[in-house]
Image 1 (cartoon, rainbow, N blue to C red):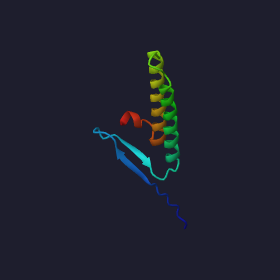
Image 2 (tube, one colour):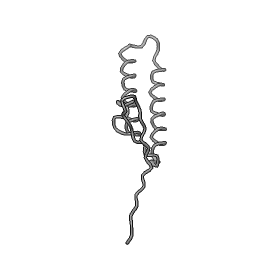
Image 3 (cartoon, rainbow, N blue to C red):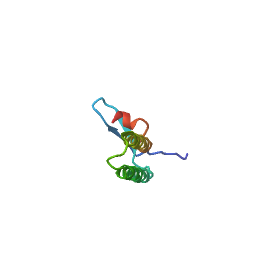
Image 4 (cartoon, rainbow, N blue to C red):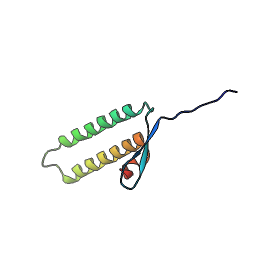
Length: 88
């Protein structure tokens, strides 16, 4: 009889003192691509902030920072699993 054997190369990582964990799928070859995309996105957003002068409206700066924060959280959760940012 033929057997089907599935092997998962996942690592469970404790991320805080409460015992919360994330599961890192080490065989997921999309992780480096996702991280590279995250870095490029954040660099682009940072350049937008650099382009603002000292006289820029504080609301514009706060909005850009908030947008950058949301993008980073979404990308991290997409890469490492749902609620990673809440746990870490």
